[in-house]
Image (cartoon, rainbow, N blue to C red):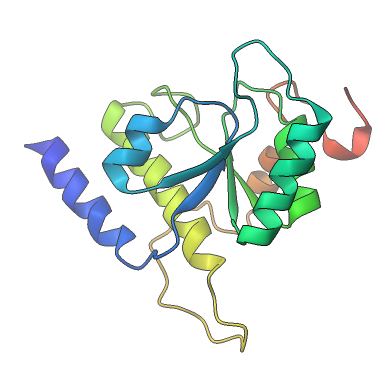
Length: 171
């Protein structure tokens, strides 16, 4: 059955990823995290509809820095301002995943969405764990040509669902 085969494929890809801690934009990922062994170390928005306090954001930045948490997860339909600030201030990488099939290109089915989300996290976490001496790890397969140096991906990471770019000073 296709779901079981996909889960086995993704579990194999994740074997190389030892540190699976992530910070998420909002609490939409507990089942996904449990299913694939990701550890949600923090949330930007803890209560629906409520903006986080400055104190919460500062505490989260400190936690990310001190804990060497390497990835912040957001979603394309959410405002990217806070995740971008956290990434810039902490040195973590912002990865945009989708909780809905079709939310980003290449995720038209549920299975495509699972593959995309897991591979985006696996690539980000694996790349960021590269040794300090510059030696490269074995490469993980790229998803839809979305490598780290892809200008379109960089643009997507900079632009939130509201279309606002970080350097435009939008609210």
